[in-house]
Image 1: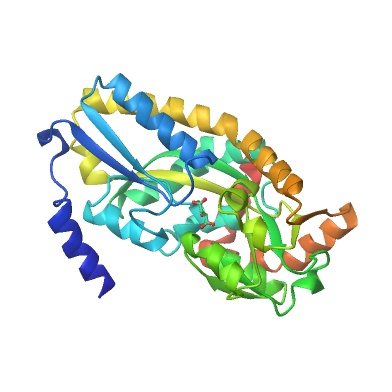
Image 2: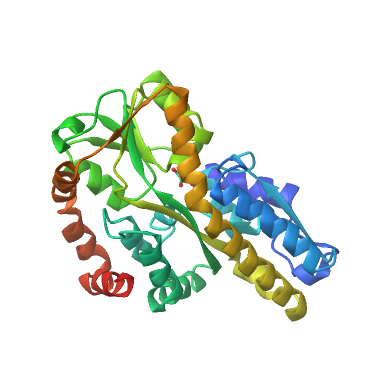
Length: 329
Ligand code: LMR
């Protein structure tokens, strides 16, 4: 029902996917769910600036932040229907879109740091995963960073037992579901735009996200405790509607590729700083107590989440997990 409404709305308001070259200027609607002052928001704005400059006005990029156009699940439908042309969904959201191999990125503690991540996204695994998007009518253009996730609740989260029985908001990822179940918690999928209110009203007890996402949504104001676990990663695959992208004249597409490359370098060089500053601001606000774990406490969390690897291995194949780990090393 919802899909058909969306389809009709998009046809009525935006028109169907048509040859990009036929429009003048070519308009790229870029929808995303986070605030402009986040790693993704800033990279999207940078892409707009550079794309319009390098194409000399032949392309106009309209950035719609904060889920103002579409929420998580809807935005992927909207891309397929041609209601938007570009998105940067979190990699965790590709499983439900039929590309389960992206789940590897969600495995707890699989990436020690951003340098390890970069080796994967710039290497054969990154390219192989993008190739899988083709058959779904999408083209992968770049991997954008956010950063490592931290946990929050109104209860101190130190040992794995502390998570027992609590409800946690998750993105729509089977790995994240398994991760919280391994801790004895109850995962619940919610769109990003709904998280603050769900925390405030007690629909869920806690959540995991990057400091930047937490801070810009004010989640820290409704969570008494925040634990710096760095147990998992949030990053993005920038995708376009394949039919639309292939229809852009080659010379203009090359200019857009250059803009995307530079926006990616810019965004990825800022993300760690953005997250460090957001954590600092949360600390300064005094609204949430920031807890850091000892190496022993970290190890206990890592052990408690280890069973998730078997679960994911059964779905995407152990070979892909091994290849991912090897490339990141
Ligand atoms: C989330 O839903 O928590 C994130 O994927 C939001 C985002 O795009 O960073």
